[in-house]
Each structure stands twice: as C-alpha cells, then as structure tokens.
Length: 215
Image (cartoon, rainbow, N blue to C red; front, top):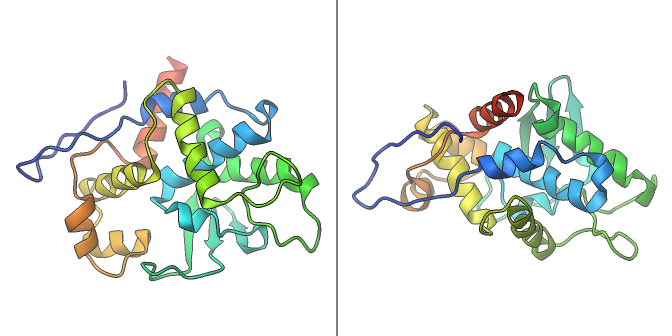
C-alpha cells in the first residue's frame, strides 16, 4: 500500500482515489505492449506529474516539446480560458519505468512511423485508421480504461487533478506557487474545488511504488 497522509481541512471529509494500484500496473507496461497501451501509460504519468487538464494534453505537438537534461518543457499551442501560462515543465524520475519524461520519449519513438517531417498531428494518436490525433473524449476514455486494467473503479481526469493539486499543497507548496504550476489565474479555484484530504504527490507516490516493486 502507498504512504497516506491525512490532513483535516474541512468538516466534510472527501475520499479520493488511491493511485498506487495504477502505478503498480504501469510499472510493468512497456513499449512491447503496443502503441495503444503505452499511450495510456504516457498520458497518466503526465497527468499525475503536472496536474494538467485533458484539454491541455490534447493540444501538445511534438515540435513544441523541448527535452533539456533532466526535464522536458511543454509548450501549448493554444491558450485555454483558465490558463495563465502556455508552457510547463516536467521533471525526470529515477525509475525509468515510472518516469514521465522517459515514457514520453519512448511514446514519441513508437509513433514516429505515423508522422512525417511536416506533421501537424498532436502528441497523442488514435490506434485505428490513419492514426489521427486523439481527441479530448478519446483521452478521457483512456483514463477510464487504465483504471479498469489496474483493477480499480474508473475515475475521471478531474479526480486526478484534485488528487495532484491538493497533495502538492499539503506537501508544502504555497498557493501562489501552486496556481503558477497548475496554471490558474487565482487562488480561489483551489480553495473552492481542490482543497481536499489527499495522498502524497507525484514524486512521493512514484518513489513509493518503485520501492514496493523491489521488495
């Protein structure tokens, strides 16, 4: 089981999901499992590493990714109504089997055959037909499928975002820095919708899952 941290923040306790079963499942997923499965792994690791929205991940293009030493900078093509920044960074993780940066590179390699030098497709591709860009609804379905594959009740991307943002806050991140990282315009969004009792944030969860796998 993953490390849990209980913090009483309101009279009403809200139970959110335990990410460990999914991480334990993803630990064994490799490029050999195919484009479709590995794409879902890539999406989930990016989500828990950033707290990003589905509407952000379906706007990423290969040409707008900058790999710099131990992190990748992601530049979004189009602004969204709630975003205050068009770019964000994702740090690498020691265990490559759960590293969002390593997994992203692997996924790009898997999809290379379906792209060309003038390709305008977005990062995530469908697994059927001409492998066109995956839509927001397709990515939302991937999240539900990965939960089923991990043996847990399906959740949606909003629950993941709550998990990530609240955990960042309870691990010492200031509201100002949190809003900057998650690309919010004001603190009120977090205080109204995301301030919940949570599990440990991305790196803590990934580290714990990696340790359990070696036991």
